[in-house]
Image (cartoon, rainbow, N blue to C red; front, side, top):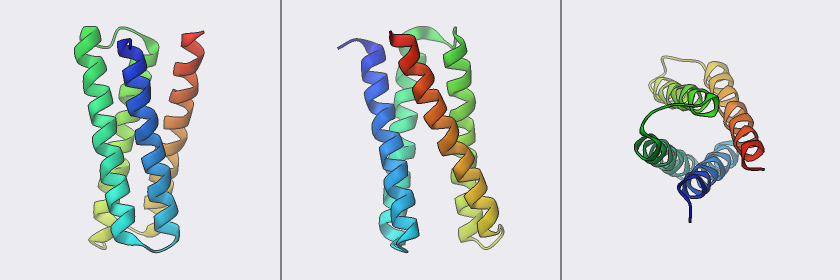
Amino acid sequence: MLPYQIHATVNSLALLSFLVGIYYARKHRLKLHHAAVYMGAGLLTLGVAYMLYTVGGVPSTHGRFGLFTYIVVLTALATGFLFRGRRLRREHHRFATGLAIALLVVEFIYGLSLVT
């Protein structure tokens, strides 16, 4: 397997894990929601770190946009902690999470367009 294929597989699993986390949040199963979100964050961190190590930096537009998306995802994760601590309203956490997932989907599609 090529490095970008491993990166794509790990990040795809992270996106699926985030979507499962959203599903469990809507079903009010918070332990499963948190487990899925933490697993997605860990997988995304692994995928980003692997490509930074393999490529040796951020040489492309896809890499720069991906790093920005990663920071937005971590910010959405932080808003979840703030929401749990009752320092942030649910609407703000939903907005940050929706933005993060939308950016992940756009980044995923952009990465697929580079393969062909």
